[in-house]
Image: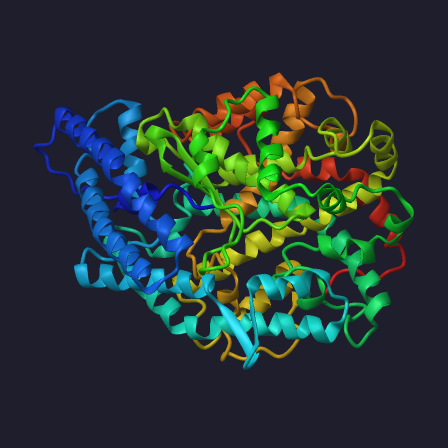
Length: 604
C-alpha cells in the first residue's frame, strides 16, 4: 500500500527520547508550531504525492530525478520539524497535541542524518531501487526477455518444473545490482536514526506501536506460537501432495518445500496449487470466479465497481468521480509503471483517492481489488481529521481492513452480487474443507512469511546480518519460519530479497503480519456482533449495517488515539490473539490432523 506521502516525507519524523527542549517554549508556541505543520501538509502534501504518482506511473529518467529532488528537500524539512517537535517534550498540553508531537517524532521509515549531501544520496538510492524493481526484466538471450508479470504467468500456472525453475531464477536475477545500493541505504538510515536518538533503524521501526519495542516484538512471537500448529499441519499436507506429484527428486517427503513449485513467485501464497493439494476439488462444485469473470467479459473497471458496491452496501459514501478518472486500472503498453497494487491518498482535503494496479481478469485480482478499496475507504473515513491523525491506528490496521473484506467473499456473497445462483452457493458450501483449504493457502500461509521478512531486515539493520551472509540468512530464516527453501544453490552473488517489492521499495512488512492476525479478530467480532451463529467461514458482512457502522466508526478514528483504543472499539479487546485464526479454520485443522496421521511432519 502506498500511504499518503506526507507521512513519509513531511510528517514522518523521528526524534530522540531525551529532552532537547528549549526551556522558553510555551504552549502558545506549540499551537503555532502545529498550526504551521497543518498548513504545510495541506499545501505541500498533494504536490509531493503527485510527484510520486508520476514517478510510479511514468518511469523515466526525468520522473525519477523529480521524485529524488522532492524526496531530498522534504526529507530535510521533515527532519527539521522533528528536531523542533522535540523542544516541546516538557510542555504541558492536551492529549491531542501530545499525540501529534509523538507522531511527528516517530513515523519516519528511513531517516538520513541532517545533512543535505547524505539526504540527497539516500533519496537518489531509494528512488533508483524502486525504479529498478518497477522496470525490472531479465533476458535469457536477445529477444527472449520477461518482466515480472510475464514470469508470474509461468509461476502461477505451469506444472513443468523446468519452466518453473527458469522463471523463478530469471526474476531473481534483478536483485544482483541492488545489493550495494541497499546496504548503503541501510548505512545512511542507521546513522540518521542514531542521530535522532534511536539505537538504529531496527529500534526505530519497532518503537511506534504505543508500547515498548521489545514488548511489541514479544507479542508478535506469542501470537505466532498460537497460530503455528495450524501452519505446520497445512505444510505437512501440502508437502505430501507435492511429493506425490513431483517425486522425491523435487520435493523431499520430510524436508522443506522448494519455492518455485508453490504457485507464487515468493511462496507467500499457495492458492495457485489448490488443485494439487486438494484433488477432491475436481469432484466438487467450488466456485471458479476467474471463469465467471472471463465468461461474462467483466472489464477491469467493472471489477472495481463490484468492490465499491461491497462498501456501499454497508453504508459507506460513494467514491468521488476523480477516483474513476485518475486511477490506473490497466497496465499501459507505452511505458513502464510500478504494477504492484497500491492505494493512494493524494489530496485528503479534496478527497483525491486513487488506486494503481495492473488488473488482470482473474479471481486473485478480484480479491486484491476489494483489499485495495479497503485502504481507499479508510482514507475517506479519516480525511476529516487533522493531517497528523490521517493514518491507520497502527500500520497494520490499513492492511487488516483491506484483508477483512476477503473473508466475506463467500458463496452467499457471490450469490448476492449475481455471480452464482442460490443453488450453486448451497452446493459450494457443502464442501467446507475445500473452501477453507483455498483460503488457508493464502490467509494462513502468508503469516510466517510476513513475520520473517522484517526479522531478516531487522538483522541487517542491527548488523547481525552483513554483506557476507545476506542471501544465506534470507534462506535460513525462510526455512526456519516457513519450511521453504530455494530451488537451487544461492550464493552471495545473488540478492534474492531484492526480488520482493517491499525490500527495494523500503516498505515495512510487519504491518502485513499484524493485518493477517487482526482481520480474523475483526471478522469474528463483527460476525458475532451482528448475530451470525454459523461457522465463521460462512459469514459475510456484505450488506450489514451493524458491521458497516462498526467499521466506519473505527476507521474514522484514524490514528488520533492509541491503537489499542481503536482496536477495542471494534473487537471489545485490547490485545492481539491468534485464537480467531484457529477458530475460523477449526474444521480444516481437524481434517488436516486426520489426513496427517502416520506422516512425518515438520522440517529440519
